Image 1 (cartoon, rainbow, N blue to C red):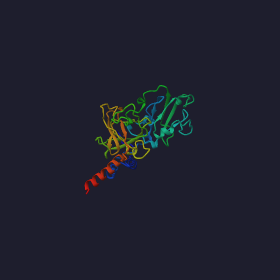
Image 2: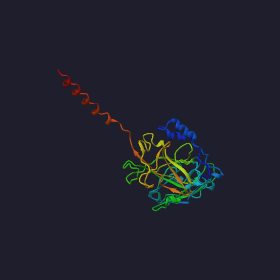
Image 3: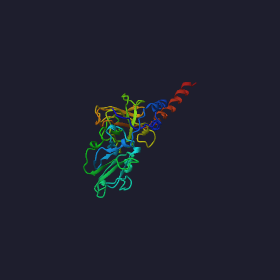
Image 4: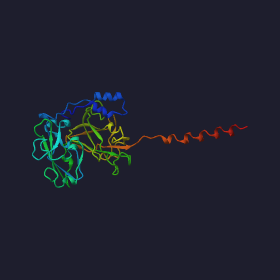
Length: 338
């Protein structure tokens, strides 16, 4: 099981996920109070040094990635700990630079990297003049505030052919798909059914191993799906977990899952093609177990069906309240004539 607890849990942050939910307020308050906080993951200091899990990341045109999935603590005793991203950042400088701010070379997706967003690469990223060396190679530096030097760097190489991105991620990966099941709402992934981007997915440690979101669980991390509906958490160790698509995705117009409801779960017998999400105190949640520290489970998927509220017009029309029910045939002269 995990050697150390993870990021500080902010009750105020979790409360945002429950606004507008159908869970009784008392139950929400109880969960906020009971959900076990974890000590902060130190990103600064001697034991907080970070590293990339690969020296070179080779990406093919059309591939997308979240750079946070390639970062871990350098200290092996902190394996599985989650990075506090308010205390770490990425920068892009001239080769061999030691200062993270003095020699800016470009701003290639830095805002996306530091926001934890997915980035998709294309032919334009491999054109002449791109990257540190002008040939589609981008050296990204990993730094922490207050440190004299970078912790590590990784070179991203963009070309027509790339490597298996999962081989380069930090070991222990779970994901991977949130999709719109409305075209054929049967709980099965179909080729015509698209992924849903921008969905907030939360990772919890299922500390009591009961497979349900409750006060015994520990908040670990969160991410957002890529434009094609993919999400990943990397650097996990063996243990019991919960992934949750929280209520905050469903609340208001413009939210990625506004007026969507979870589709049928565990249909068809193929874990790679079904939906795992079931109703929970934290939206739609799925329990999973990683048996080994380097396990990969890409079958924790969530399907949703568009289901706007019925306006009720069909139930209140003239057929039910019109003259046919109250007209002269029931009260007219034929029944009371002289």
